[in-house]
Length: 161
Image (tube, rainbow, N blue to C red; front, side):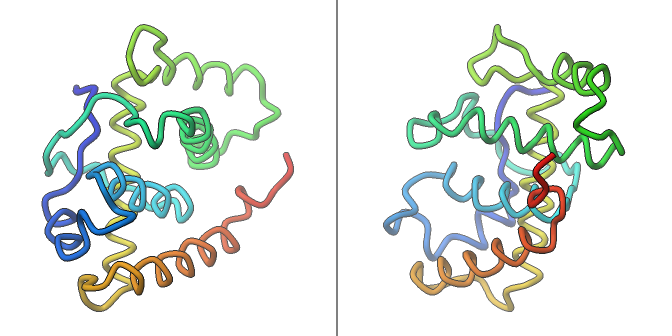
């Protein structure tokens, strides 16, 4: 297994017209767009296709690292049918996913899960938008609407417990 974040090659190609156009500066920005949609919709694809690009949370996302980890844990609890109040099961998942000896604080398995959700999120995004984006402003508006819709349709993100 790898400790690297991985972005599918078709995702890189799909985003090529808006990559490096403000505010999309890094490959991690693209990864994050895909990841958030994957986590919000529960879409997951365990493809190993793509290029590994970094083994840490880049500067702009470092302050959101714990939120991303929390969303991953929440998604996996839901996927596995574990309620957040089931302390032993939640603890076991944390033990599986957290590795304080790494730059990301995540185990190989957790990184692979994040990569799977990013892949699934890309598939969802590309399926909802007819053509690859050509204008960053239009993409951001459309993305915002898709993410809000995904969140509204995801009871685990709206619940208090």
